[in-house]
Image (tube, rainbow, N blue to C red; front, top):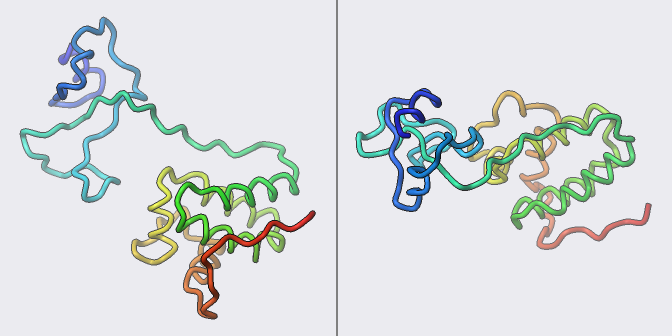
Length: 175
């Protein structure tokens, strides 16, 4: 089975942990969505150039893969704005919830169609909210595909030059 997995996924080594002994009883290889690249934990965006021999090139996991974001087609302008307002408020981590909800409260009603698309892509494509937070706060450089006018506005907003108190999300307004 391990040889078939190495051929299927194009890796030279494959190591399974004790919790993955179910792999040995499988008759068919696992779905590609169950395979994720080995990373050292320091920078999850790329595997190490020379991994230690006792570590994995690929880790088999029972965790489901994060689905890729598909932009909504033919979504009305106001519906998109309302969805983005909701998604800005429900980020899953307090830091981004406060940052994006206050940003959306201030700017979302002023955005044109192109800016809404850029914002939609920014908050929905990256699978890791911490990465977005690091880009916005300047801890990590912003990838080129997300470095646009909306990201610049968000970075300015995050700097909070007026020293606004942002310890709670703004109240929702009636449409």
